Every structure is written in structure tokens, then in C-alpha cells.
Image 1 (cartoon, rainbow, N blue to C red):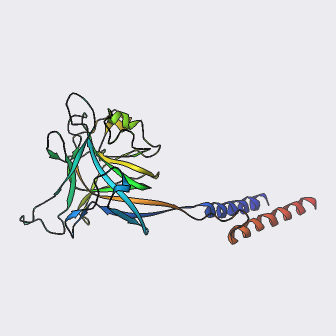
Image 2 (spheres, one colour):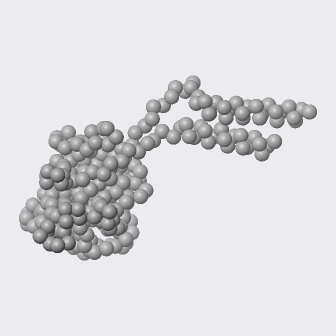
Length: 283
């Protein structure tokens, strides 16, 4: 009888847990480039309310702004500066191997001071790191990214980070990656490799384990300031093409007095089992 009671309790608990699971994820792949119109699919801004571009996830319009940041302004300091996003196709249609299907567009940065354009990279021996800052008007999670171009390989090529707020970005403060690292949301940091996907023609990185949401995210070349590991894993360059954005939404919570039919049946079965058990003990 004790074994039967245990089974009944387990069944009832499973129904209750199933009823209390209230998180769904709707995910869309967001391309930073509009191939049909050959225009950018983003607004260069840290303020989503000022953005003139929206992405749509599960019917919900979400404003998004993208800016680029790098600590390459001076070799004598690690201060971050905002750069201009710059984009390229990965091949020229004049080449025999290049087709409209495998021709992909990816973004890097143009440094304000030097004017040079480059991929988002960490080439300078672990001293300089390039990352994109994404600003949303709704909390989302970033589940992956696609890159049109990659130079060099490592088990840590991409860093993704969720931020509490924009502390220091866009101002004249002495912003560094070290100071940004003190503003990270718990359970939002990840470091990932990439794998080429022939079906989409991009180097893909899936951000497994990133389940928390944030309105501000950093995505870029592997950045040691966000990793406790002593390994550098530098020398990687990337050009960003797509992002997998997930919207978490809550189910409507039923009133406390309402019990789902499966849950009520399980609880009734448990009660009946307890009654039978007590009667047997009395006999």
C-alpha cells in the first residue's frame, strides 16, 4: 500500500508541475541585412525608442538598435570607443564559385580615429576586443548567431553577455571592458565556437545554456574580460550576419481556486488511496 501511495503522489505531483510550467519561447532568426533591397536591417543607436527598425517575434514588434564598441582607440589605454558598423559581402559575383545563394553579407567595425575597417576581432594579443551592443525595448534572450566570414578557429570564438543597463555607454566616462564586466546579469555569459552550416552558408554558433533575458546584449569576438579562465583564445575575426532572438512569454495564471481537471483527478485518487490505507490499518 505504501508503494501505491508513493506512485499516486508522484502522479499528482507531475500533474501539478506540468500545470505550473508557465514559460514558452518563440524564436526568430534576425538578419542584419535585407538582401532583397540591399539595405541594412538595423538602426545605429543604443536607444531602442529612437530606432526606426523592428523585428517581429510571435507577432510582437520589438525595436532594436545596434552599435559597435572597441578598445582600439589608443595603444596606451583600454578605453572603449564607439565605432561605425561596416559591412561586406563574403565573395564577388564575378568569381565563378560565388552565387546569389552562397553570397552572404556580414558586419564588422570602422574605427573612428584611424578610419580603418575590420572584422570584430581580438587579434591584438588579448589586449583589444571588438563587440556589438544590441539594445531592445523588450527583454529577450539571444540563442545563437551566424557569421558570413571567420578567420582562425578556437573552442572559444564568440562571447555573448547580457547587461543590467547601459552604464557608461554613449557617454564621456572612462568606460573599459573591465568596468562593463561589473555590470553583467547573472547566468547570461557564454563563450562558444562556430561550425559552418552548408545549408545556410554561414558559420553558426549556438548559445546553449543562455536562458536568461535582458534588454542589452553584447555579442562579439571572444573577450577575456568576461571569462574567469586564464586561457586567451585570441586571434579570431568574425563578421556578423544573423542573430537567433528568443522572446519569453508567460502563460496566464489561473485563479488559485481553480484546479485543472487532470490535477483534480490525481488529487482525488491520492485522497482515496489515503482513505483505503487508513481503513486497512484499522482492520
